[in-house]
Structures are given as structure tokens and as C-alpha cells.
Length: 132
Image (cartoon, rainbow, N blue to C red; front, side):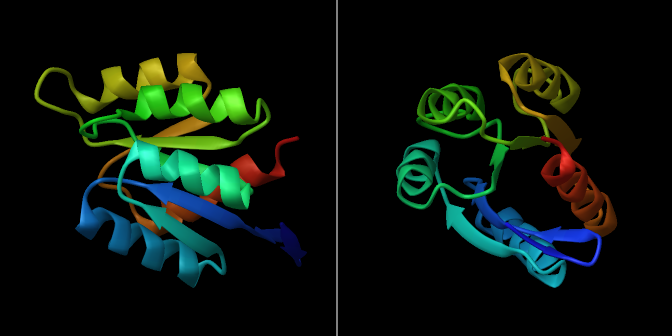
């Protein structure tokens, strides 16, 4: 992680099964000066996390095959100090608030409800990166 002025520019792993959400979120983060790696599933995200050990992870909760909660657990098994931002727009069974509440119990530092604004995302990422 690199500090520029009062902002931290980070290597961020973004895990989301929705191509459009990944592209939009990536663009927001890159405008904020961050380097972004992408994964379209929890499985590929875990593989990339092992290889790159990014400064933080942003993961969707509702994904096929391996959901975000399982992904969060696996990431903590690899590195108990991982910084995670959980994002969700809800799913078929529960609303986003319920999913995100559970994500904090699984260890996510904070959560964002989709859709979110660029300023909201960048402020949240900055807050997470500044916490030791």
C-alpha cells in the first residue's frame, strides 16, 4: 500500500460474479488511484488472494458456487488480518441488509449496499485502509 498525501492507494481484489458491477466498481476504484484485480467467483478470488496478497478485498455476498460468506471465511483462513469490504444488492431469499449484517459477523470490516456512489465507495475504502 502506498500513501499519497492523506490518501492510501491500494492493491484491491474485487470479487463479484456480475461483469457490469465489476467493471463499474473497478472504474470507480481506479479513478481513486487504486490498482484493481478482478475475480468473477469466490474460488478464483481465493486463488488470486493467495498469489497476490492484496491490501484489501471487496467481495459480493450473493454469488453462485461459493458465496461471499464462504469466501470471507476462506480469506481469513489464509490471512487473519485481511481487510474485507462486503457488498450486496440482496438476493432471492433475503434483502441486502440481512446479508451484509451476517457478513460483518463473518469478519467484514464494513459493508456497502448496492448500488453505491463512487464517493461512498472511495470513502469506505479509505477508512478501511487507515484502520490497523
